[in-house]
Length: 451
Ligand code: GLN
Image (tube, rainbow, N blue to C red):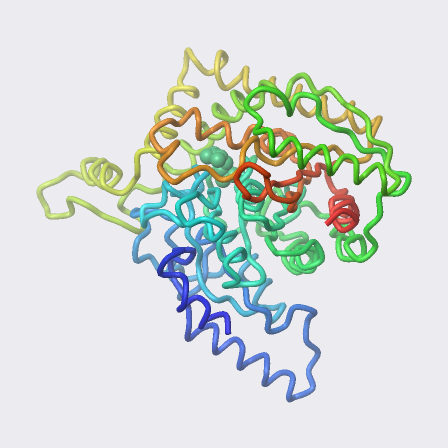
């Protein structure tokens, strides 16, 4: 049914870069065979899923939305891919994304944009717009994203779906193409909080192949999602995340959510996190710095695209020509920014300062959690904007992640879930919940209570 739905509408939406019809059918048949043999099946056995094209899939193309890896077939599975298969989940295909996960609209994909199923002329968010559009368009009931600065939560918000950035280190990064290694985090996307929890449990947990993977039990997210309640909880509204630049209808729905939390028995207070206003600036130094280092591996020699290999160019020229042809504008911008910020003479002024801000943000969170159990804010300042509107204005694009970035810098857990439709445009609004590191279950407890 899901393959038929994809055939019917994905020509218009363009959520998928690759639909693995044969592979999906084979996986589904394998689940049936297991069931017939009376073997134990996982809670998500046979459920179809859309996988962001940043996770390696053995024998199935992985492009990361870039020309650089066009046609590359990975010889191995990412840990996340492997765990999905072990859970008997059926992988339908690979979803569209901003090139190397750099963007907030999926317009930076080298393979063309994705439309938001609510209004195809608008963006589905990014970088994981394909995964969220697949959910909103009912082409898959589950999807996977990655969140470096908001790429799970912001697409969830603007498509009216649920997206969770687990605690940093909660889900393995092995086989997840690196953008900014100290921020990157894979996580679940779904249409309900409980579905997200079931997927979270299937994909999370310690992995010896990822050196920053947390060696501790997965927080009890499914139990929390089944027992949604905020009675007696203390919830902090982030003071810095409102005011100028926030759409009126977004704030209206957010304020209604605050009222609902109070009615359900939570104590809601305002909390100030003054360093959050510097988060965007710090992120756009740290993320490009790490990206400029991580993307050095795309040299035209090891794998993927190779340009100028005709015997008339030196190896250095081949690398240069390959990068010129293989990387898009935003990726080049980030590599140049990062190389500059890390260069001697500028390192302390830029990268060093950004790292200090990162520490201040973590301290703001620590102070907040002395007073409250979770923090809340709108996920994004506005609803989905029209395709093309911010494409030539990187600063306007970066503002889409204003509220999501602090959690990546601090490494804690955060969720976006549907919060009604903005009255002025009828488009989905997202509510963000933020919990301390390794307390991911609190997101699900609160989310399930208000969903
Ligand atoms: N939009 C942000 C960026 O462009 C976040 C991306 C992400 O989370 N992968 O870097």
